[in-house]
Image 1: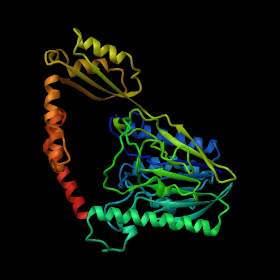
Image 2: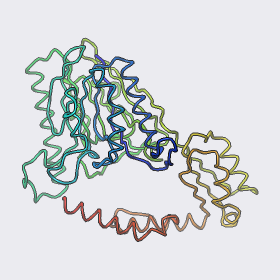
Image 3: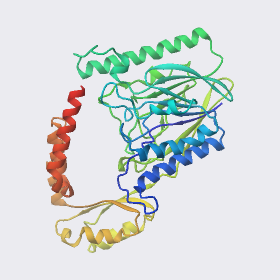
Image 4: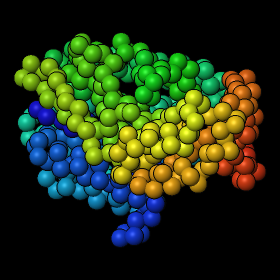
Length: 411
């Protein structure tokens, strides 16, 4: 049995894009569509038995008609081949208000081959290679776990613990049911959540303090499951490497920001043998390359020439590029944004040109953001470090205040 496992498709991110003259769309939308279509073509070529999507179809829960069309158009060949599709609701798919439909709610209504998990559940799926059970854990929404008003007085940390317990108890109960039924066919645990130890960036950063529950690998890696398919973290990784079952984040199919610039992007092909043992392959998509050029010219008599040499070492033609230059205060006058931009004229897109003198580095250290700050204070500090944001400072702060107010209402 062969399954395609993917997550975090995120149609709608258009940062660093430009207008595509042929379609009139932001070019980054086309990058995401290209990767999605590549993934679907591989699925069909590999003759997969199931297309498993573990959440986050769009940038947010209110996709535009254009973004919805891109997603549906890319997915259509899978359904035309009568390949079952299982989808989980991710945090980006969920609306903020109680009672509203999520952003992917429409797909099961449009095609009978689509099964959508909006709350913890388990379902047997019939494929061309036999039966498969999916134990689905979508993003944890309080409204899907508790009755209206239940635990309304609980603090965020208490709610995190309640959600953790509810999900853990559900997993344990499903594992027990599998044992009792003595299933002859494989079971996959599919979830959109944050697992302890998951790396989120190219620096191997691990987040220990999150607003959402952190699940231990041991809470998911039950022997009753052949494979644990995860979404939510954009970096591909196996958190149970060399052990059974694999606990795998497929990773996202396209880069969203420079925090992911070194990460290979793609999806996973899972194969389950007759003994219900799973193996997998990570297959890369043609994701847009992000290139970060960091150069110190402090010891150079010709700082701009040194920057030119650093840029020449990279193939920037089809890439989104950022350049970060460290220089002395005396050299700063010899380095301009315009000059560096000219050196980057061959790049597909310029994301950032940051020229920092010793004096500016010291000033940045003085404005370091700390946990003790409020959200507004932290944002003000960040804007202070970004001269390009100074003209819209008031708008940014007002927008942040409005968003924080909406979050407080929902909470």
